[in-house]
Image (tube, rainbow over all chains, first blue to last red; front, side, top):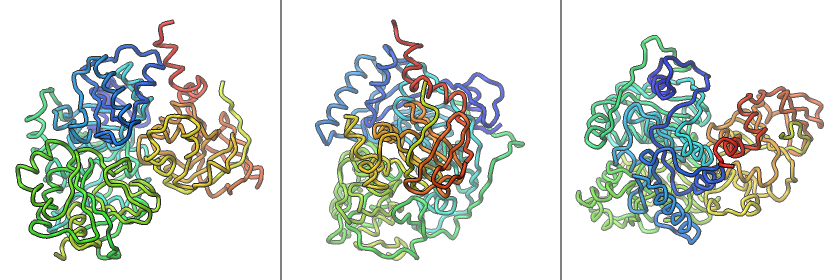
Length: 415
Length: 168
């Protein structure tokens, strides 16, 4: 069996499971973000009274944090009431950050767990050797009631990544390149294992960025075998006993792909799809109205640090605005302590409160008709960040910072 | 019991129709059913909600419903009156959301090449077939699984669970 299958089998109380089988798994943790008050409504509608386990459920306010409208303020209010009435142990209000960042920071993600969240980017937690997957609101309400959920045991695709990245090329470039090659429907309903010497070597932040975007290929979940960096991270934060599952040597993958990243260029996903990816050399140097660094894909300390190294002592180009939103309060605090925030503000950047920001078009830096944004986020669909005629180019935080500096799409290697 | 045979007009979309195209994020705070219906598939075809009639069928290529986990993507199709979605494949979260809310879906290989806008279709969910009355072609799809059919028949996962959990 694959490590993912062993995690699922254990949660289903079974010795062995096979691809395609429908199994019922016990959920280790369920997380609901503030887009989904429907979770609570569905819970009541199904006759729910008390949630299955008050220690294993958390609400995270991130998509609307702090509330930009009266309606979203009302959503937060109703959720706070539910959290209080149910006596939930964990709660992340508007002062914490993006769910996929604050959950591991709070020690609530560990190898071998099953984590479900009302967010498609829950594949992020494959970085920690966890089974993470996204759910809709009503599916989540059934979890709140029962603590269980049915899953189809997925085929597993292996993506082996080898080599060392050249200077100014990052994990975001790696996953964009893979997406461009494999396309947005490559892994629909399947699981993706990322392995290879590159994956074994990289740190927690880079692993999270890669697993985060596995869902952009349609993947149900992503998996990386925990390395020393992950174990050190988890042990410093998490009190749960954990188990690292090994994939059997005779396991047969549905498909295997190999990538060598030694010669990789910075990658860009051009509007309007995540798999419309080109190396930066062949992308037109279009004028940029907004540059955005943030989100569950590109708002970690390492991402802000990359921008700091490019913009230190310089100025963002006149006519371009640079929005930076740290993925969590912890990231923001560390960025302040390291001096990145002051330096970036002096360079002309604007910081807003930790959260999802404009990534999904709800607030804090939306695009007007015809505007161009280069973004460290995960989706460039029409209308994703505001007006449906806004154009979003996805890139690494370094490419975003370089483009902010020059006012047009710019290769960070050229600076 | 849910209606298992639908006869209506089709509207055809491409592949990778994502949830931002089905229901843009800026409308996520809306709650009134008719308001949510007004923006159905707005990102893919801004005229769709106005021109479609209740019962019409959405046809698409691969990976329909990719992107976010928003249940609104299924809700807007239901509220607009779409009777069934036929696609070459569905994104996982969208598939679960649709079945949970009792929106019928059927996987039909190459359907987007075999149907044109406003063709008249007859969809037989039990037998997994689509008859294109305009061209005369019969397209064989994948039958809905028994477990998904049980949820659809109950009118969604909520009525099913209500029976199990609600105190009478």
